[in-house]
Image (cartoon, rainbow, N blue to C red; front, side, top):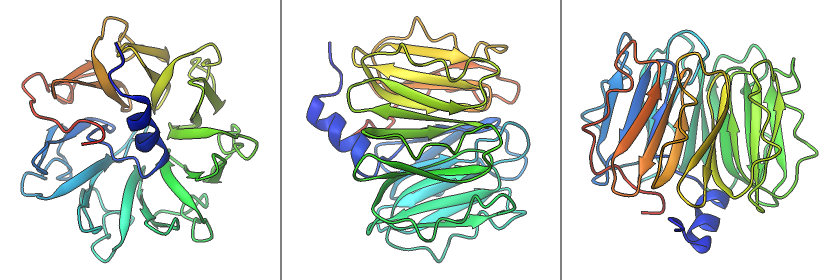
Length: 294
């Protein structure tokens, strides 16, 4: 059974994707259908103190391979709020406006504006915030030290660290969705195949044989693909069981953190596998999480 129609899929992945589940280093955030937000896991820097947020339409969290994290919320009016670790000013987004999508990397926040331009704030030692000249963008993704942008023509651009070739995406085409991990980048093509570049130490880039994929997610060292039939595939580092998703069914969305993986089911509940040292996988009682396209 197809859980997302072709038209809904096209709209979701090509224009301003809005995530309702997102996973960070050691915490998990979910957006409910009423615009409120819930969180589980590490709260050392207040990254889970989001219960007062209202009228949120998308969430993002800093997904680092190690270190601290923050949480970002996109308001329906196009403003942005943030909570958590702010050593590099990555939470100083209160002045942003006209934002239609958000992404969070390690120590920075990225915002996509309705006109297709991009803004970023936070640490820029690798050039990962140098996105002011980007144009005609429809989606953004943030890895640890690199930022990726998807243009409306299906081409991809990147800024920041390129030590392992994770920013070598200029030759990609026909891309409809992007994801960025610690040192790798993943792209979903319109035909349901997937491409990846960057560090492949744990086989996180071994996606060339995937077919029928409608959504992707990138953790620090693993990659997740959601298939049209609601099942999930995974590749990469699996020390904590973060790739043990083969039994999942009825999924409509996926997210990947540092060492855990999330799946949103069509009934608004959430499943999780992987490291749970801080309670980041304690989401079994979550209900009414917003579905894609709603």
